[in-house]
Length: 101
Image (cartoon, rainbow, N blue to C red):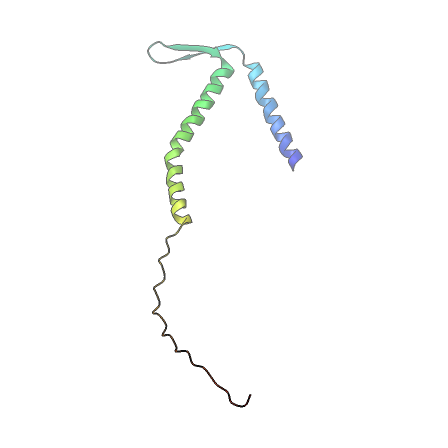
């Protein structure tokens, strides 16, 4: 199974590497207000991927915090102390004396 996993990883790496090699021509991203960014196509795709990843992590952060707080509360439950038992009466010391031994 490990060999299959490494073969899939190697295939994905080579496919993405080939994509990067084949897309070296410059591309232009036109923003608002006549601003344009010209860079290699692979850099633009990489920047879009990184921006999407950062946006996704930031969007999920409040949910992660909520679930973390909830798990922490469930992890350490507050157990009420058992009620105190009344003190048992103390028996007087009784000495048993046996005759004949």
